Length: 405
Length: 152
Image (cartoon, rainbow over all chains, first blue to last red):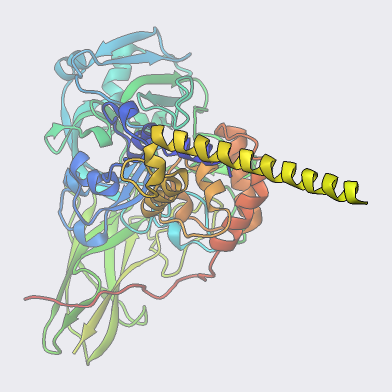
């Protein structure tokens, strides 16, 4: 290998793009000085909890672990990051504008952030956002991409205006079928002409009460890693539909065909396939509502308790567009199931909390499995659900290890 | 015969003098060079490492950051792959040689990856050797359990 070209590759500039922030005077950095700020800095740059796990630092892909998702409302420091491009540098949102464009828009126009905040009614909902690839790491044969385990899910409180209200104010034609977005993030290649991701939602989802153009998360400005200053939030759908750093809404008269809407991205085979199968693009269908799922957030896996103790267990369950009807748990690998206590959601599309107090019959190794059932009667599978080429929608039961001594 | 022997001796003498002159020039030259480049006398010096040391240092740092395993072809992977995405993306994935090739083709078709030329084989060898798929079945055992006493 050519030594010079290698050295050029690890220049200050490439380190800067690796860590996603600018190194001031990076070009003056001597070539034998390499800053030791990589991973540690995620936690200070984005203020993330120490137990967040970095899967990828360019682009940033960071997940939580079940035991830190115990909060009823996910705080910013425990929210997963799934980025497709480079986070834009936005320090001041006072001149932020949202463009409305597309063939189905009555007129092309822009709204300033100020107008969006002042002229439209503000709504607040707690909304579950889960990455479509959450759980990908378990698929066999493996699927390419970030190998999410369990932590690419959150349920924060989002505030903003209804997308529907804005659409009505801007005016749209009767042929509108899809709303696409673009954001201010940069493609990994640095090419300004390319979108890193430009997905969206169909009209039916866009006009729901809970579909927001959010400018606040948990009562504060949205953190930069999560879409400051404006984000589309479509709860219960793959989180990629909820575009960050929102600068344009495209009112389309056909299904949006932006970056990662087409091909194999965020799609599963329209008909189930054998593991490892190759599926042609035209046989792949867009993922809409996420499937029913649950997570045990307390205790952390690995708890050792005494024989006479009861184990308090709690967690959250969600079901995409639907509600969760029931959560059960098993301590004998699914041979028998008991009902957990399940709360109603604070609003539609918010996760629901469950809890149980478990007694164990004798000493030994146990796994506590949780299984949620949605309002249509569909439950989580104990083994992996249908294999798909990109490894989406793994909603297999979560389990934790417990030892009774 | 006698004259011939003298001629041979003279030839040998000329040869030896020639070598001596060359050696003298080299000696003067290098003294002169070292006078103006004294750092060449010090084999390891902070702030002015040799290219090899620099490379090793850079590789180590990148390795530390990427968690990519060492092996033949690693340099080619770092040079061609981590310009656009983190090495972590490689480290967390597993695929057959065919699977890795299809990822490369996908990146070339949609993400602006260049023709890898001779490096393609080297990179594929590295990836297929070090990042091949593991059989997982429909559900694995819970791995890496850290046992702790649950405080009441």
